[in-house]
Image (cartoon, one colour):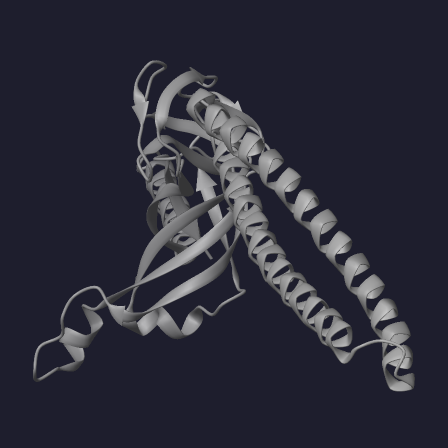
Amino acid sequence: MKEIVPMKLTLFSATVALLFCFECETAKNKDFIGSAIVECQTYQIATTSQGAILAAYKEEGMSVSAHELVALIDTVPLILKLNELNAAQAQLSQTVASKKAEVASQDFDVKGVEREYRRITDLVDKGALPSQQKDNLQTQADAAKLRIKAGQLTLESLYKQEKTVQTQEAQLRDQIDRCYVKAPCNGVILTRYKNPGEVALPGNPIYEIGKYDTMEIDFYVPQPMLPQFSLGKTVRIRIDDAAETRKNKEIFLIAVISWISNDAEFSPKNIQTRESRNELVFKIRALAPNKDGLLKRGLPVEVWK
């Protein structure tokens, strides 16, 4: 009997310890929400120009900075068109200058005829000259004014042509700028769809870039838990790390809820019972800063309160 009492005490102590650990684990798991997969915002980088790809500077997995040049489209055809347009614009400018000089000369002639008309009018009124000379000068002045008006209308047409050519030049320069494909944000090259030597088509992507500074974590909660979450509320993201696990440490990151679905993922039945409503789940998205780069696209994580 002396040996049985200590054994009973040992079993009792072990049972108490197990119950204590179970209660601790249960209390701890109350904050556990569920598992999720890390995602990131992606960008399909394309060009609106068409041409051969001269260079693709980035490989898959490489980091890129915002506005960094990642690919170059052949600009030679556009440059040739631009040179042709510049030559036409120079010729048009010479035509405008010539027409302006012509209109200025006609205006000078009109002023001369008007001065002669006023002098002849005085002489005709005094009877020193026949009225026919006065009529001839009036006809010359009227004809010169019509020529000036025609010249001004021609100048207006030339000015409009200049604006058209300038607009075409601006469009060509814009197309040339679009041949220099740049990254829209800081991130990582996820996929390269085109290689140097292939033809880039308008709207067809050349790269897919993932924005890695802030990652997206989508998780699901049942309907009864939905009131516990709101926009701007924070959750914890747990990352599995073998080295930290051996040290009995856990890595948690803070994420902010940015979106909550208005609809359940599964269609409810026509007649809902309390049990069937509890089966509905709602999607929630949280954004987690990725300053240290711990989060990767496709990484499994746990979401905790």
